[in-house]
Length: 170
Image 1 (tube, rainbow, N blue to C red):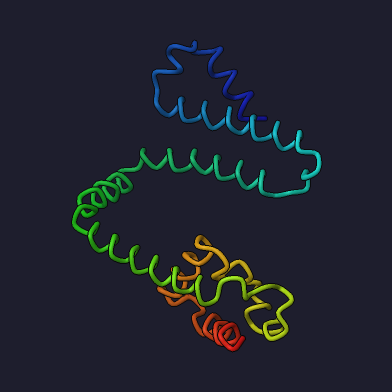
Image 2: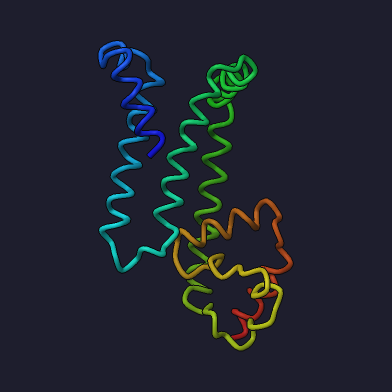
């Protein structure tokens, strides 16, 4: 609530019209209001108070403040301008990669969907279980896209390949 105090103090000192003219103040205002709403929902959901998902959402919103500060650095502006210039040229490649990942994910969901669970006897005790990679699976499309992306960049592909072999044996 320090941010809310700072927000109210800033509005009182400079006035709302002057405050609202600066785009960065608008971002801070929206982030603070959204954070308060999230905290209220967090406390209203008494059954799930221990859940860190609400806290993660607040931290993600606070990250917007940090990203907004990047516009004051010249090197960051140059990087963003370069990306804006390159994006039209690399967009066809990105579309192709997305289509291929979608295709592989659809195939993975058809072959391996629903076969992975925490009590799977062949997976318990493996490196996959030790690294707690249970969310990387082909049980649904979104998790499958994350797994396909991890396989594309080469992240622990041997661990995933061994588990996929276990999945395919059943």
